[in-house]
Amino acid sequence: MANARSAGKWIAAGIATLFGALTGVSGASALFGSPDAQAAVGNAVPFVLWFNFLSGFVYVIAGVAIALGKPWAGKLATILALSILAVFALFGWHVWQGGAYEARTVGAMALRAAVWILIAIWLVKAPGQGKRQD
Image (tube, rainbow, N blue to C red; front, side, top):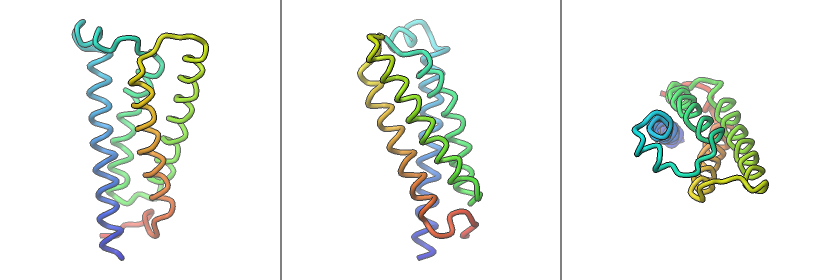
């Protein structure tokens, strides 16, 4: 059982860290990249783009916290999941009000929400995830 927990911890940490790095790189490209890179973003919603870019750094912090078995990693994952859901709801309001958007944003936000909800649930439910297991 300890090996399964340890493997789960490393998988969750790896997903969180990789997801954070990819989110940061794509956000940086969209926000600060060449004019062509910025044009490729299309009708991105600025508050969603900035949230995703900045949260990428927090994803990496969460990934490291998971890997180190920090007791607050589950709380951080939960805060990330709830924050993503809140921004997703605001994005939905923006769309409902007739605001321009890219359809791929819906998929990207759904993926982010699903990943962080699953990580948060696993961290909260997995025995001993708040303690070092190695």
